[in-house]
Length: 139
Image (cartoon, rainbow, N blue to C red; front, side, top):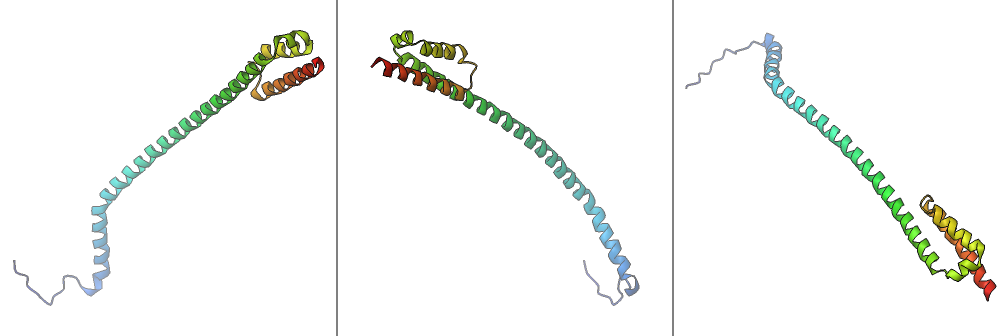
């Protein structure tokens, strides 16, 4: 193919601005479907990711609540075990001898499941005080 150069321009100086606008419109008309397709895909991906993010955040909140509940139960069970160890360490003769100690132990054993961990430790402190008073009285 031979290109022949000529001095006749394809466009004239008077309509060069119009030709620029026409050229840009043609380019945009060719790119618009591609851009719209990519944009719609991105928007859909963003919606999907946002919904996954929300569901994951809800799962995390639920798991956090479950773990906090389990930790509270563990702490309570630890306090209950400590209470049983202390109560089993108290001499049965002391419990029979001292009525207030016996009453404290009975009350604690009856309501130990309903009490929070802090209350269990308070009851234990009371039992230990009464037990120590009993020891001091006997010696």
